[in-house]
Amino acid sequence: MIRELKQKFNKSKYGEANDQYIQRFLPAAGLSGANPKNAYTPIEPYTVEMQASVNKHTDAPLTGGEVMYIYVITSGGWSQPKRAVDVFRSYNTNSNFKVFSCPSLYYQCQTIVGQWKGLK
Image (cartoon, rainbow, N blue to C red; front, side, top):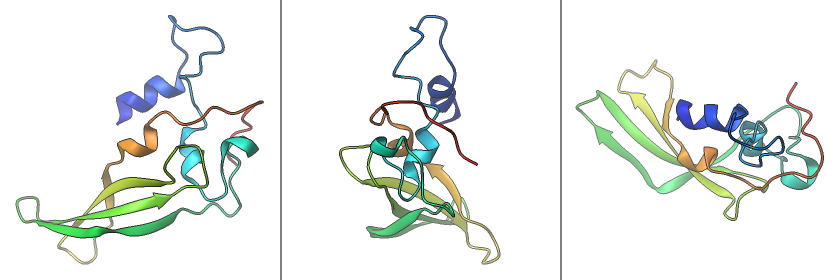
């Protein structure tokens, strides 16, 4: 995931100056209210809308926890607004959830017209 994101955040010495593969706005595209028409400017305070998948979770005893399947609901940018994300949670009830698979959130999204202003 980190390798893919680095490719989308950094200009390539092989690409053009206006290379549309470079999408620094990609993390903002998953936030509520952000879409290509408003240059991926999310609503403040920044929030992420989520929905449980019908395959809610799977026990993963070898890793000592469970995998939960959710969707991040986006406001636009991809052909499908529901973006699949898999999170892991240890059986220890005091543990945090950790995202371990989210390729649908770093998959190329629609480009914007104009300039992306960044996040605050």
